[in-house]
Image (cartoon, rainbow, N blue to C red; front, side, top):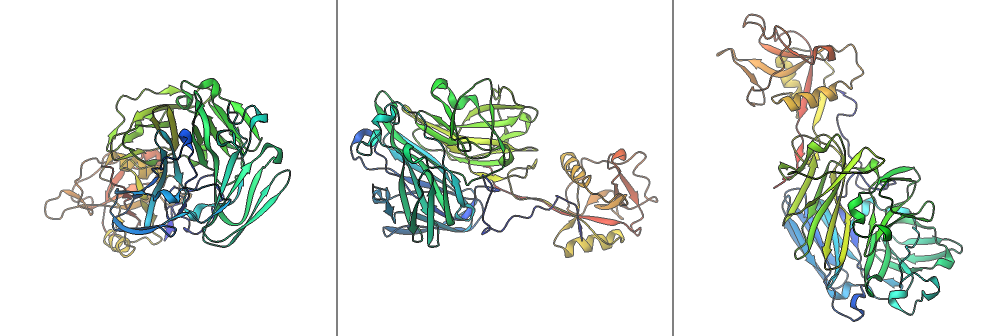
Length: 535
């Protein structure tokens, strides 16, 4: 069987270590989560920490193990979200080494988000699958925060809100040795599922974290000053190191009302770049974080834009999404089953992209694109606190039908045969002789077939045939015959042909012709995508 290049998407094995800034998508079957200490309000209120676990497939079994405190299993269906409330004892304290990690395992891929909350102090974080963690991370520069990191002379490990920033290194399922490299290197050994906390001191000039086995790394502060002498938690997961220079786009809405206090933290240059509304793109080969008072956000590089994201609403706060889309592709964006309703697109100066923000409704929100890729961020506001995270990406394969869990399969057969034999050939492959019942499907398939380099292949069988009883055309898929693409002068009479071929000549617009069913030709076999329910 000859495959058309690029048509059959082969997903990487789940246990393959990722070296990209972001993996193919944000889902997986094994996650390790930790909840940093939140010192907001300067007194020990109980935290209200939780995780949102969203199933993508039916009959998904999910188990949550909270160290020694609690283990629970639930059965979820596609689109279901389990909000798991953590025991307050799972919040980290000041110990450098801790076993307080939350393990989440599932029988099928899920998306996970962590929510740290203490009254109005909130942070959300996209949790990356343990199978997509890295062994090297670049440490970004520490943001300048008056009352916390500035003036530098006032930074002290003895006063929480004026303490240094922290790194929290979370080990996966193997014994590990982790090295922090900087002016002076330090090393720590971690047992499976242990974590270690380190101060990020200016004098030590920390630049990278390197581990023998994959780890997760959190970067932030337990109570950074936000405004008016109030402080709140400030943490974000760092993406694994990436040496390739990438493009990062900065939606202006992320800096709304605090433009002069918003910075980009570039790990490759160890520099802070002030937000510039006239330049919405930055190139960097390492981590790029956006800092605004109360929020640290990992920006999504262009190469990791996706076609579908899932965002879960958080009760009792303002919930919205920020989208970054190519300026010529805005019409393809959908929220649930409907196109966006009158979005106000804002120019991202110096780029070909635009951005907008949309209000999220209660429950799950599926944002997807029919034909292109985009970046989507979750944003929330509670009181004065503004926080957010990259939205969990589900797929990088756009499709006009919805959010793709498994992409369509399109195969060109190796052996030329008659139409009946072609039907059988495809069925033996657990596929179907292709039915092109919609105009948009015809265009999508034609565009992908045009990628073939076999110039000798001129015509292929498709799954359209004339009924011997009525003379009417029908698809083998039993879809109605509505949108057709007959070539000039086609189809002929009943005597001319009973089965349909498609031309692969782009000059003929992939037109169809009726042919003798015994004529030999190569078949095009097909199966449609598996889609995530959007409602």
